[in-house]
Image (cartoon, rainbow, N blue to C red; front, side, top):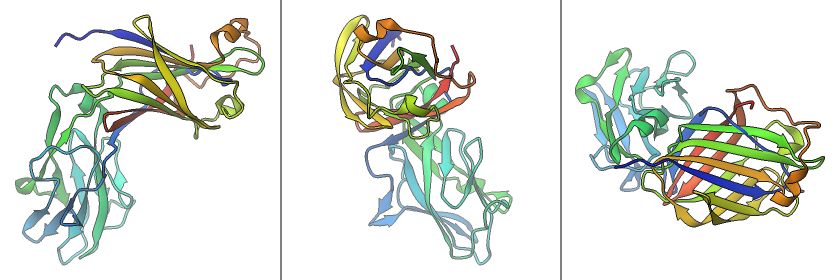
Length: 314
């Protein structure tokens, strides 16, 4: 398949400022469907036994699953155990366990209690690692999950899991602020290498809940916003569906598919009002390469992918 690079510019009018980011800080994937795999109403289970490991129900039946996928771990042994789950392409998390930087799930490593006999670790969540999603050449990724109990790997009973490779893979997401006038700040997002993976992008959802740049993130009092999206120089209709002090949701009138795109998204006043740009009291960017706390969720086709903007400082 020939890969083409497109430039997409989305200008979304408002009173808030400009946002610029440099590199991809965090990205994770989900679907709009249920996030729990069940069999006959019960959660799928990996059961630790004295003989090794038993698998009960989905998602370990060979069928492709949409991430995130969940299952439980049950200790069917007579003694408490420490457990580690690892898979190169998957990130595993659970509320009562530790997840390492490389996506391994660890129970009983000192920072969490050992799994008692008969106890259940509920809702282990499996998601695709962003790098694995970007590297994938097929629509699915199959990976064995290595299970280690008290330091011994149960290699003969590794369960295998197949996840669908969702769309909305982003190589880099950068963010910057630009003062337009005394009351307005322009926010600019730049996404590099957007690949929708055959899934049509329908909406963009911006979340400033954890943004620490004061009033620049407050959209409730913004001037009446306008929105335009240009693809290859041609405007595309976009509508702001929701706007609060910390959220802006934008819907594309025509869903977008691309295999490699450079995307620029701007928040600010209408273009005619932004011509009086001034450098006075310029809102501060963070250190280049550091996380901004602001996330962008790309939504469409039953999937969503979320990326956190990174300051590029330019």
